[in-house]
Length: 223
Image (cartoon, rainbow, N blue to C red; front, side, top):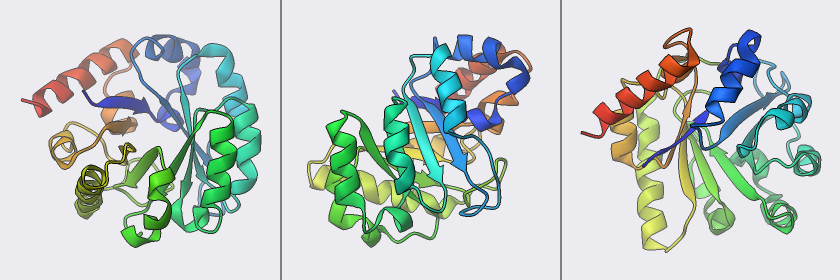
C-alpha cells in the first residue's frame, strides 16, 4: 500500500486542531515545506511551526528544505526531532556524506529532492546513503501547479535502479498528487504520495470527508 504524507502548507490553519487530530489517525508522515523566499519565490512554514506542531502529533515529520543554505537547518531540525530532512540535490552536493553522518547519528533519515530538470547522475555517488528520494512533479515553491508528466521517468528509473542495486530508499512524489494522477504515479513506482490542495484539503470542508474521498480515489487508481 502506498503511504500518504499531507503537505501542511495546504491545510486550513483556522482548523488546525481539528484537522491534525484526525490526520494523526490516518496518515504516515507530515510534509513540512520550509521556504525562505530565496531558493523559491515564496515563504511558508518554518522550524517554529514544527516546534508548535510537535505538541499535537507523534506522526513522523518530513522537512522539505527550499532554502538557500539548507545544511544550516540540519542540526536545529534534528534537535526538534524531525524524522526526515529532505534537501534538494543541487544544495546537498558537496555535503551529502557529512550530512548523512550527522543525521544517521541521531537515528533519523536523509532525503534528497529532485526538481523536474535535475539530472539523475547528480545523486548517483551518494544514492546508497539516501532513505527517501522525493521526485518533484511540479516546479518547486507553490501549490496548485500543473503536473509535469515527464518527471515520472525519474520515478521509473529510481525503481529499477533500487532493484538492480539492492537498495532500500523509498520513492516519494511531490506535486499534483490527486485523482487524475494517482494511476500513473502508482504505476511508475511511487511509495509515498504527498497530498496537498487538490488531493486532500480542497476535496471537502470536513477533513474526515476529504480523507474518505482521497481513499476512494486511491482505491479506483489501484483497480
